[in-house]
Amino acid sequence: MVPRPFECLKCGGFNGHRSRPRNFTEKYILPLLFIRPVRCHDCSRRSWHTVWVGVRERRESKKVHGATA
Image (cartoon, rainbow, N blue to C red; front, side):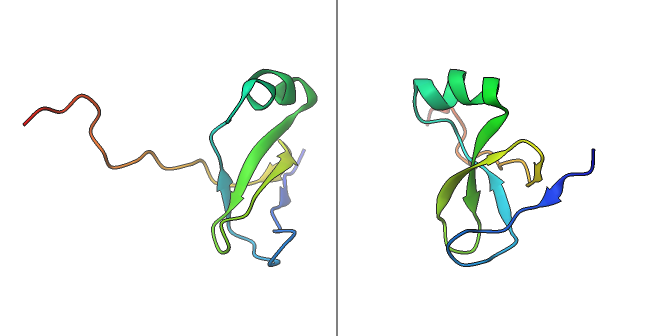
């Protein structure tokens, strides 16, 4: 199945990336329904889309976890 392109519902932008799950529902329930949180790269609006919407994977933060000075 070919993924359909992402389109933001607010600004109409086509640049989206996966967002971290925030709560129990987003982490455990939505995946059972083939839905995931997505954030628009242009306006930063967060929304839910099916897994068949083509979006980029999220980038990890540049912070180094556990680094000491």
